[in-house]
Image 1 (cartoon, rainbow, N blue to C red):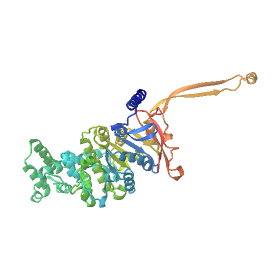
Image 2 (image 1 turned 135 degrees about the vertical axis):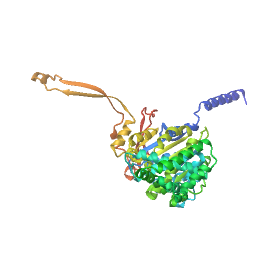
Image 3 (image 1 turned 180 degrees about the vertical axis):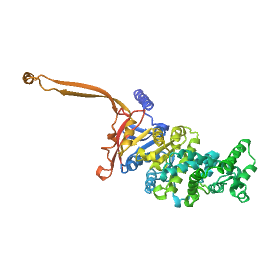
Image 4 (image 1 turned 90 degrees about the vertical axis):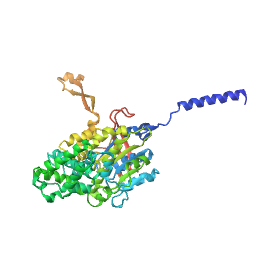
Length: 498
């Protein structure tokens, strides 16, 4: 190699080194894009985990078939994800199977498919593995709350009081069963409550002393317990043998109806077989293998049984995520709920507020804010709904059908000052003024705060897919805090149903 060729060679190598150092490196970790809203606006893993994603739109607006499907495909394609999907409609199963197949991830999808399923998860056993009587109680009461939100309304103005009393009754029963048998089953719990004394006189009767309830209390007191646990057992005994037996019949009946209504679903038919027998998988297995679990028990097909199983899986998975200490290389978890009002409860807002640091998030799809109002079993449902929805960092709005949801969407963007110009024209005072065109026009302007986007923007003009719209669905994406490339916190975009 000549001296000139050698010089050219080293110049080229120097230039290559400069290019390598300054060439943009692909984003890694939480900054890697899952998808692009536009050519300049990325939706990154960090954005998803920062509170999750809310998709709202009327039935037929394309939220599931366009934006929902695109986002689901992008998340599944990331091999560091794992999650739970609660199917709301029978057609959800083939849609998700197609998503996993097209991304080459079919082996990562497990299906909990009602009567066809070979999978089993004992809810109370799973709760007991990681918690105490309070955690087991929380599983039962949370499922009961979800059931009540479905068909039974809010329970009147005293609902909160009776819910608290139901929780006390279940908690004290669980304490005694754990001490007596070392475990809690739904059958034992139902039998324990059903055979409890309903009067002080009954406690002294020999027939009652042979009942399951009294045998459990005796076994609990005979067990070897720590001082703290013995104190808890005495509190539980005082409740059942004192407060419960001396309670007014009407109040006791109201509490009993709520508790036994939940246990009835727990202990019957398919639900009992699926969630009260022997477990053959764990949530840790899903996390370790980066697998997804699809619970294919849509309430439209399975009724209360589907709602019960979905609510149990959701709560137990949420608790699993919050127990994890997430590292830089750990997978991130998604809880995906279409028709989210079927599964919503008061714990969701608490979970959303904490899950980010544990690499967890939720994706909710539903029609309107009203859907969440009816799901919250409380007189304060509006504030609970706003508390829940306020935690979602990204909100995708397809065509909305009610003014309350449109107003809420508009209010999330706030207001800004707008200048309004006006003017008026006075008639000429004389022929001279009219002949020479003397101007008698006055102008004015005013400044006032107005919504960044009017509610009408969310209700009119957004395409809803189908052949007539070329299978295109319009949406408005809102991201509080950080603006998009257009300098605004909102973005008009379009999703394809194909």
